[in-house]
Amino acid sequence: MAKWNIVNEYDWCSSPRGSTMRTKAPAVWLKSYKLKSNQIMLLINGYIAIKDSTNAKDFYEKIYKEGTEEEDHFWIPFFGDNIRGFSNTFGDTFQDGIGGSSGVGETAKNALNTGLGVAAQVGGFIGDNTLQTAGSQMASGNYGEALKTVGSAIGGPGNPGTYVETPMFYQFEKKDGPLEITFILSNTINSDWQKNVDLVKLLTKINRPMRKSSYSVDPPRIYRVVVPGHRLIRWAYCNSFSVNFVGTRRMIGNEIVPEGYQISMSFQSLTMEHAGFVDDVGAMTSND
Image (cartoon, rainbow, N blue to C red; front, side, top):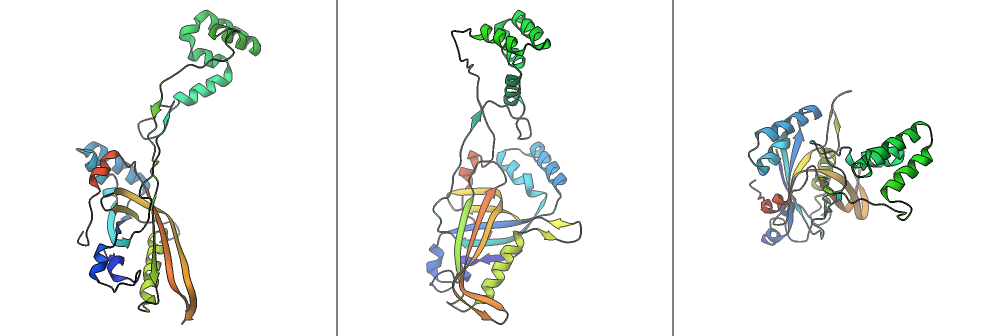
């Protein structure tokens, strides 16, 4: 496990490395984790976490913990504006026990397409005789008559449109916006371009899959992300990564070396960021 203190040890600003002024620089702290279990084992570990957890915090700690190995830590300058964004949705669908949606809303839509099916949905107040009549008409191929029968029972010609209010349910979805980080590494302040190149290569490698053999592939790292005092993403992945040249560039040996690099990273939560995370956004330190 290595610690990469970009805030204090890299040339991203004009203040000297190790300067006390840098201790006041805003930073994001990342802990990276290597996934050491396959997808099936991670799923099993998730169910074990449900069984063995005593509270919500304990559950979120365990959901990936047993399937990961802690790796590099990073302290990265942070000057972004948008630290959080999310949306909520209520809909006409129930959700099943493992986070997906089940068929209440979809069943209603399919039933509506059959005419008779939608009548069955509201059969409690249009009467069995109406359903039987419409069913007979459907069976004989008189679909138009069946729809008229049901339509008359629901509203009649005086009500050209019908809408039945039903309860809507919260949709448990992972809709938290990603956290975006952008910083500059200068190759001209101390001419320490090789140190910057090594960091760029490291960040690239750990956020890409690594093929170990013809059938074995290690996935990218996952992370714990902390914006001190404002946001905790307990388990996240890097969903976007880019490196751009800054300024003029020249050849040094066999490598193109620009005046600097602009690195942009975006981190998306792997779990629902429930409200309790707001109470756990305390800082990490270089000793963590």
